[in-house]
Image (cartoon, rainbow, N blue to C red; front, side, top):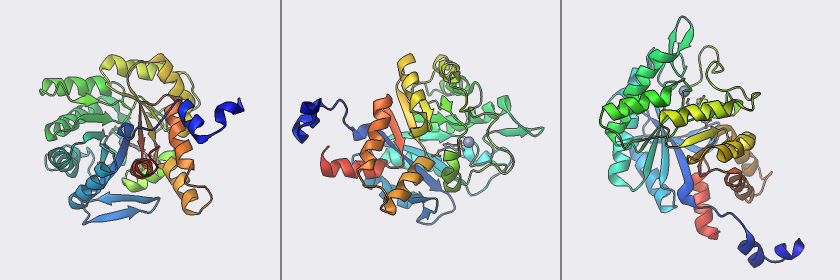
Length: 318
Ligand code: PBG
Ligand code: ZN
């Protein structure tokens, strides 16, 4: 076996994978109340942006080979139904238009209510419970507003049943047949989202998300969740988080033929980034990290390291 590992040139020739930065997606936080950009304390090196600094960030991304972005918004005001989410002049809607007008990028937009509701829940509360179907009608409205602004993909992350089908119908009815849906098909209720909730100011004020996000103690539920999204019209399916769920990634890849995105979430970023900053781990760990996710079967990886990886693979020409 060692003959196949005997030199760098041999190893490079025999490698079965290489990183294509066109398959990486960079998440970006837009803050309606901000002037400039501000670092997120729980995610060192990741910032919230206003529109002007967003534009500068986009230049940096594109010149580093990263041409896919996933947008999140933090609105100036929250209410019980999250009405800022579908405002035509909302920060996300304006960011979509700006990105599509000025840059050659694929724009994905996370579609959820937790950043917009005063409860921090991903849906509308009725009698103390997140109500599925009244939430869907708000999701439809948000989807159409993102499509109208020029989004390429809407990405519903709220884990309401039927959200993909409902949004697909609403987009079609409004004339947006070509706007795609990236379905958060397998989104587990995970502690690894906690830095994100700081970043997006979206922590639930009461309760948790376990009545809609998946229970990681169930290993087979992904089949049903993914099948439903496929039937409802998803264009891309997803597993989220990444690193602790690579078994699920591999299984989804083997059973379904739609493009598979893996969301390597905030907690994965913050763990690695902290260890890197403290010098506990070497920079090469990032290669092992990103290769592991592609090797498990990801077609697309959403990672807060996307920009850093873009720069890294430009430098090393790996
Ligand atoms: C909103 C949403 C969350 C993430 C993506 N979209 C948070 C959550 O569900 O609590 C998590 C992303 C991350 O941790 O990086 N529903
Ligand atoms: Zn949410």
